[in-house]
Length: 95
Image (tube, rainbow, N blue to C red):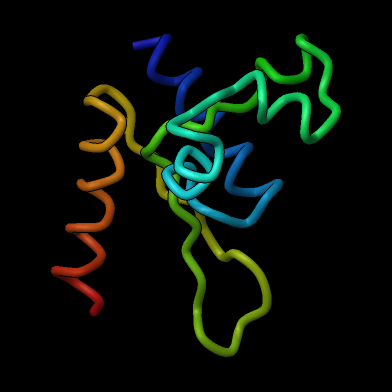
């Protein structure tokens, strides 16, 4: 369980710092090239351990409200499934 908590924290950090889903950033960086990601944002190796560009972190925005109001994270499945669970729940309940 502790490992999943770390993954969730790292995904949350990506969403809050760069305002996009972790799946988006995964695709931007060639399927999760974390070294390329680290270099582009001039992060040290140590700092980069605080971020994970693996699917499963999604920002929640509300029309008329500035910024992100929440972050939903899932960990424990394959990254595309982590992301897919969130998308499915949002689509089934709010779209």
